[in-house]
Length: 313
Image (cartoon, rainbow, N blue to C red; front, side):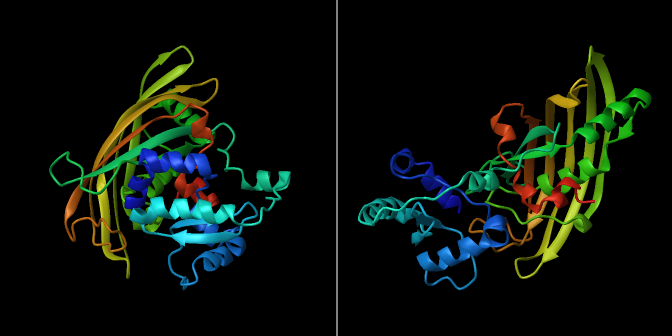
């Protein structure tokens, strides 16, 4: 889907879509295994009669009542596909969407837990030994939720210790779900038992009124196999940074972290695969996200529900 993302960034294509379509992007697990599967999978078959139960990724055109009438998954055809889709729609009898208030509430994005802090996570894949990006990859972006009781535990620990371990659930969530290589599209998740190292420690770094300051360093290592997609995948590296917590709200007001890791994979599911059996560099950055948009976009791995909020413990 990387080429599809590039196609959608074309101003002409984006402008045509904005003028003629109501855009919706579906999370794969929710569409194929969640509550929406009983609606989505029949519509996949309606639009794509060749669908045989494998990948459902692609572009689908639907009428207002949720009936799919066209499908394509080849980005170079996207302009023609969109134009013919509009023309075909205009020839159809018009239907009402029939959306109720209950439907809207049910489809609303999952909100962060009460009092949670939100962080932005960036990652980039580079050739081993350099800071040049691997051709065909892109900047991966996601959000991370930090629960208020985890922030409160950091503040308490900093009152009595010169150095302390960061909350295990927070470390587990970070290493399992966010120290990933998502630079080629939606990433296959890690499982907690793939982790052999996850050590993150923090130190108090001063106060400014109600604000507590900290620095931290961390190291992690993961390795697993998942035939037939891959037989050997791994990632090991470090992360360090600093953050500030307002003790009145028990939320991060500032967060700055940078990390480098060495990753490897012989995965074959991506059209832009990493070097087989070869190592490459993963660069990562994490910053605070206190704007309203950040609280409306669910972290990609949060589709796992309570598994995500438990931090992989």
